[in-house]
Length: 158
Image (cartoon, rainbow, N blue to C red; front, side):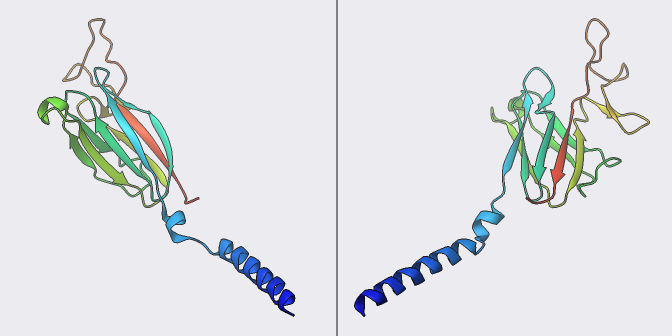
């Protein structure tokens, strides 16, 4: 009889352990990621240009350049609900040698297009374009370069 009780106890413990694996663990499901968006020194660009993240994730912009830059939302095409964003990211020269940072969390799916207002502007079609002759950066060969911009695609939760 004692042997039967031991087997029964073992089976019950095994079933209990299996059932515990089926219970959702909120800490694991709620764990979200932070993605980095870096401004490359001397190149006036965000890298990576495009990112795909999930709802609840955050993006942290880090200005590694000596110059100041901005993160401005292109509200005409944004669908993430993050409208009216216009944040100054101080460069290391104006921030005590430290890079300026800014973190933004994305609570809804959609597309978030942004640009630096110092290094691009919106054209008539609401698309970021490189600055022109009336106040922009121009190379010796007349090239205005590419606009300093990026896009984040926010997917539904996994």
